[in-house]
Length: 141
Figure 1 (cartoon, one colour):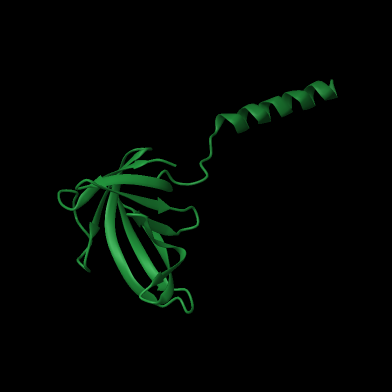
Figure 2 (cartoon, helix red, strand yellow):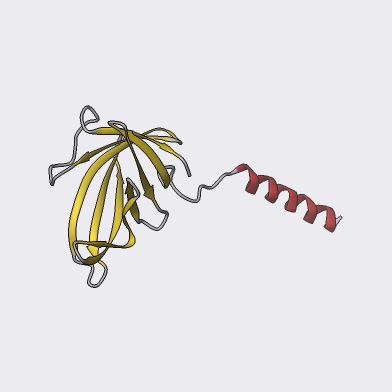
């Protein structure tokens, strides 16, 4: 009788455990591919908060890259808003973590595999909508 009770508890625990799916990371984490004016580029957002841009075989970002002769890293921070996200790409010196620059943007998820991203280039303010300077990215990894 005791073993039947133990077996029942084990089966119940297994059913409860399997019925809930826990995600390792948010849906925006991964490698994304986009096309802008015929040019193809990539954006990678890692689980540990690093961002990489890849364009024409050149990679900028990640844990370590060279910017103007200085070893730097590029991090990203995301803040959930009501219908979209704020995203900041922050470039810091590796040596002392001094911030070298920040690129502000917004994005929304059309699905688990499609993101629309708008960035405020050249030091401009964070975009407030997706009407200009936006790109649609598709998840590839």
